[in-house]
Length: 222
Image 1 (cartoon, rainbow, N blue to C red):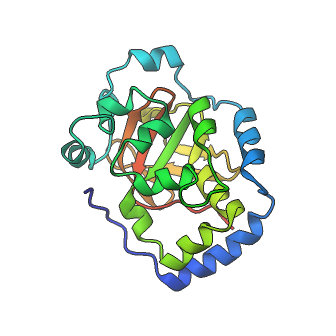
Image 2 (image 1 turned 90 degrees about the horizontal axis):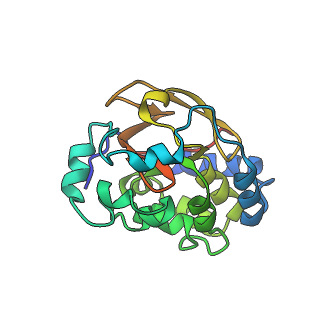
């Protein structure tokens, strides 16, 4: 299991944040509307053509101090770095034993009214993927809320997705997410941060996306 550096989120703070965020997320009425938005969102300027991505060595652009631990935890198979490069992103994530909670969240396993698999597999994206330890920081009451609040869950999930495939060298800076709010990437090399989340291992390729495993669930601004 990958070791994260963030402290656990306090239950009271999480519940207060969810209550505030729910007000801002109310315009996200259903997954179908968000699917349309994701399909229509233009590519970012800093993208890599799909043909070029297909020719890359799957390990060529890996960054992050946790890449060695990831390779040790998942050395081979469909969830490994080489294995993920063979499948579209939602499918690749579902094969990764470090991303079981995220997989449930995007595929209807957490909330049956939120299923983004086809949308994620159908475009080109940069995905910030919280590992299971990241979701473990969230208190159970918040998880229970997300299991019934479709707009809130969709807002949080799409805040982890940026249109276009962005390689690590182009990642630092401000990026507009599919959710609509911006996130900030700082640092470089093995010390990339996405807002307050650390990139454990990034530059992981899938057939249609670049994935950055992160140690904290990103929350859209209120």
